[in-house]
Amino acid sequence: VQLQASGGGLVQAGGSLRLSCAASGRTFIAYAMGWFRQAPGKEREFVATITWNGGRTHYADSVKGRFTISRDNAKKTMYLQMNSLKPEDTAVYYCAVRSGDWSGLVYTESREYDYWGQGTLVTVSS
Image (cartoon, helix red, strand yellow):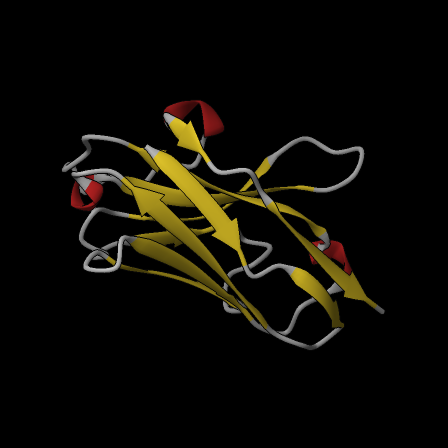
């Protein structure tokens, strides 16, 4: 599985960005997927996750109500709509896949994911 994250950039506080994560592979629909981020000097942290059919999502408290995760299985793409961005959202954002997962469970630990994209930088200026 290969993942390609895109959509990052520089935005002012209060602005919006939409990240995309395009996946290659035959069984995209069988992936639970997630977004993580890593700010300079900090550890990678969970942002959001979505089950294989989009039926369940889960967010970190820090982004709840501002970010929305979604996916389009026909396009093999996952999205992260980020609104009301804050300077503390500045980080490299990574998408990740947990393959072969039909459980409908949500996963918030990076060790629970099998494949990772290369990351896309989001910078929010104050």
